[in-house]
Image 1 (spheres, rainbow, N blue to C red):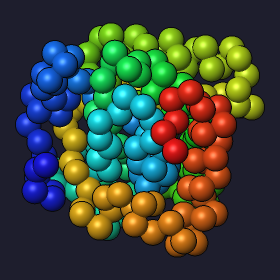
Image 2: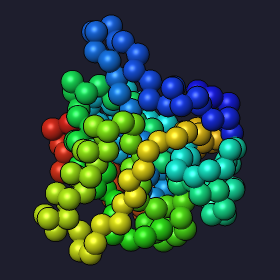
Image 3: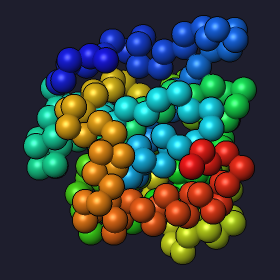
Image 4: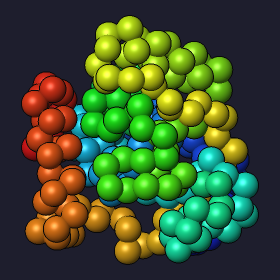
Length: 200
């Protein structure tokens, strides 16, 4: 983990270390509202090795939570999901993503408003870009959400880990008001829809 406010070198944004099984990991970077919500859901998906909350999608060289929340950095709150593609595919992660957040509300998820809460997929390479755009088209045709999907699709330039107090937020604060009102319903929905790969 890079020190807070220091960008990880681009080559390390999507690490692919070789596991003991011989299987490499991949990473996905997604933003859909508060990163606490996405972190809580993706931590519970079989095949996911780790989830890191952070900032990406803007140009500010050293974003902080306060600066990102002020809407002046261009960055969105995102999560970096490290996963084993032999157990869970990138397409499945995208399907979960489009199930637990509303991709039709520009710069907003529920009461959370501002560009930092926009729906965004930051891809690592042409295959992820293709799958992102195909998934958006499929979700639109299915009519899963009323309205036009406004999810931004852009190349990942850099990922900035969030401050330590944001790590593992739901597990450390399950009774906090935001967790009860906003995150718990997302967990319940993911558990119901993806019960075969949901871990608890």
